[in-house]
Image 1 (tube, rainbow, N blue to C red):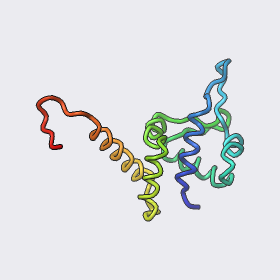
Image 2: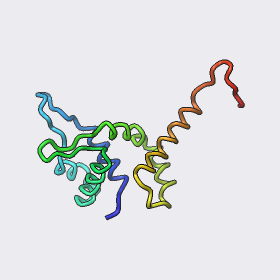
Image 3: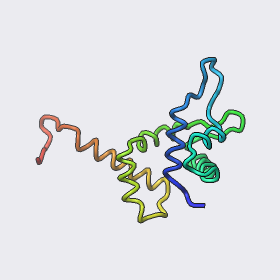
Length: 131
């Protein structure tokens, strides 16, 4: 089965959107049934394969009783993939290279965000500015 990065991204965004605890501080993290129901544009097989890949990458934890939980690394990754424009730009650029690893995609996103931040930081007094 091929890795579907859009599916992986949608799973992370869905998990981020759902509360981990209910109002009684009981764990209510979504499990596979809820993911299959809410992300119905993907097949159950595609979703579960993507969940497996997210677990292997250390972006989420999976527990039969507790459901799915985003790890610290997963939250960091969400900071880069949440923006639809950045994600779409990355998809267009990476599409010819279908063998891109998740780490490679994340590295490209990080560099893209760094360059956007660097370009938008105004120079301090005394800094060389060529523009």
